[in-house]
Image 1 (cartoon, one colour):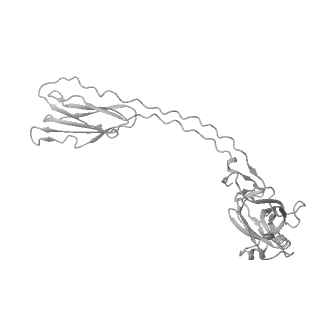
Image 2 (tube, helix red, strand yellow):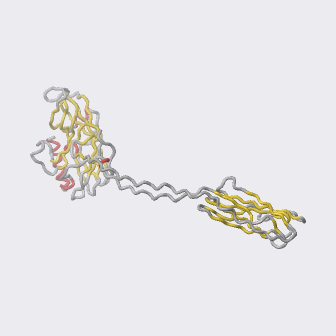
Amino acid sequence: MVVAFSLFAAALACAGEVQNLTIGDLPQYLCPSSTPRPTLTQPPTSLPTWPAYFAANVSWYQVAPNFNTIYAQWTGQSAGTVYLSFSGSMATYPYYWTGSGGYIAVDTIPGPTQTGLYPITIPTDVTYATINIYASGVTGSSRSHSISRVYYYVYPNPLIPPPGGAPGSITPTPRPTYTPWPTPTHYVRTNDYFVGDAIYTSAQPTGLRLRFRVIEIRDQPAAELDVEGQLQSIYLWTVEIKNVGSVEYDVFPAAQMYVSTITLSGGSDLDGVWGASLAAAEEAGLMPNYEATDIQPGMTKTFTLAAYGSRGTAHRISYALDTSARDGLNPTIVPGRNIVSWINEVNTVCVGEIEEP
């Protein structure tokens, strides 16, 4: 660690920008369920619906010397497109009247009840005609009407359009007013973070802001004995740092991060400073890059570190956020202050992540 501090001091001197190394407060882990949800806006009640209906007739069933026009007439509701065809027979050549030449669209009824009519003039040499009508949106609505020609004057009382008869509209049940979301339980940690959780620093006056995540903490027996000839362990951990701010961040994880609490085989905790070492990394089969580096805005870098320590299990990993100065509150071997820690536990209080700032 002494060597690491010397290297870090040199790196700081070269960087020349103290603000690129300094986080002046403790980051926070905010449980996603503690983040207030946006107020829900209830969508408006849907428009009423009108059950499908269609009925049709013709104004009369005869044509005569004094009139030759018949009206096809209808009443519909949510009936879709109204189609009509008409044709007939003749006493002389060509003996067949093509009329409309097939079905033609004469109306559209998308919703509420409406009526309509269509005039059909039947030539005087047509003796018999057929009028067909149906609505595309109503199954089984097709109807056929026969028109015959008489040779005496007729004074009919024309049939009125089909009576309404359509079922009334169906008004949807108004949507209930939403009950406001309950006030979330506020759960924030400002130290002893869990493995896997995303931890954000607040925005520094310099524009520096970071996201830290310790991905893994593990240990394995070491072949190398300690200076007293006792068995020891190799402690390995991986930290991910993302620059979510607007300025460069200069970091030297091998000097800033260390094992700070080991749980011994008997169950007791031993506090201390066990710093990263190349020998531990090499014995663990790692090829680490322990040099100081920079992290540009938007960039993420991941570092895997290894340290020798007393035989046991790593309980706590610590990190010096402010490397611009030292104070009497920290172990004198640590090159920095404003120490934060991760405990070797998974978050069982809440899951998920808040949105990135």
